[in-house]
Image (cartoon, rainbow over all chains, first blue to last red):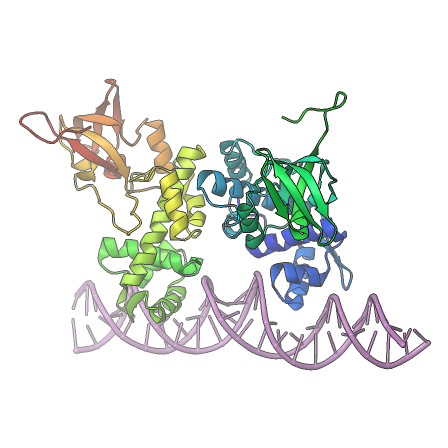
Length: 233
Length: 233
DNA sequence: GCAGTTGTTTAGGAGAGGTTAAATATTTAT
DNA sequence: ATAAATATTTAACCTCTCCTAAACAACTGC
């Protein structure tokens, strides 16, 4: 089996998919920024993708994926995230270094290939940045209890579940703060002056995190143990 | 770090490398056949590769790789063969199904990436077809004792070490004959009438192989145990 | 050694994906 | 409501890699 679209086409579909999630529709300009191409190039490609019936697009109005387009985009995202898991868990890359390679690897492999990779990796549900990996049907369950860490309140215990920004310098900053996915913290204090926080980890070590860090970190609150609430494993 | 050349350029270098091994020089026509492109396309690309100082090429005379060109070709072959090992050993692909994917994967990854993949796979010395995998310096030791299986004589014991043809139907034929790399056989008989052979495996099971099969199978003779010869592990 | 076959190169062009600059919509502000 | 600012599209052109067809070299046979 071959690739659904060209590499460039797959990149457009992926960009439109993400923009649609954020803004309901993908504007020409937003697409051009995500792909670092000129708006003129985007217009041209949108015409092609419309021809292929992968996007619906009205001049000046922006683009939306069709069912087929969404399916291709999700399959590309699935491959991207599975390869990221491979790169971190098997090839020992640091999590800030995997994106560039995954951007290339995501265009390789058909459904069978991807399912084999998935099985080999143990069917992971999230990638190294905490983003969910769609299953082979293109479905995935977002964790509904995950929110931006700056929405937490004092005394709240939480688990780090993801990042909403995968820029290298942000990820390296998290490494320096010893913040990793799955790690538990408790909110100790908040400083309205600069929006910074004090968090304490399992070992009782306190760290200060800036407003910027808290705002881009995704956390899952750990229910406090009164009554019969669901357990966190 | 980025790719040395474009995907197309890497494919040309790889093709020229292999043709140089077989014929000392890569003719325009031979290249065009290996890449299924027209001779005209080859001429154009050879000009570009000459500009880049990756090949030396004189009109009407054929092409040879420069040191730099050979280095890129070998690194591409290294990646190809490592990915093939990955596909067979980790993703459980059958050996006749890996070539198409390895053709795409071979263009991904820099030296560091490739070395990580190599380490993850346990630094294999040959790919699933028995072809040697260059090390990170681009060196490899061909096994000097490996020859085409049709050069063997009666009573000779040998180990299957590789194939000189990786076409899917040939590999599937080998599967049907239960011929695998590393398996031991003994030459029982040869039939000059049609060039076919009778071989017996470890379990005493005899198979008949045609001239075509023997001619494309690479075997390493196992020394008969008289005197003090090197042991086969 | 000259004609014919075969291999190679040049010329012209196509299509995919990009660019810049100019023209045209749309939105925003007054 | 309309001018100014912003966003989008069109037009013309570029690069890369491929193609076909025609011109040109190089071998081969006799």
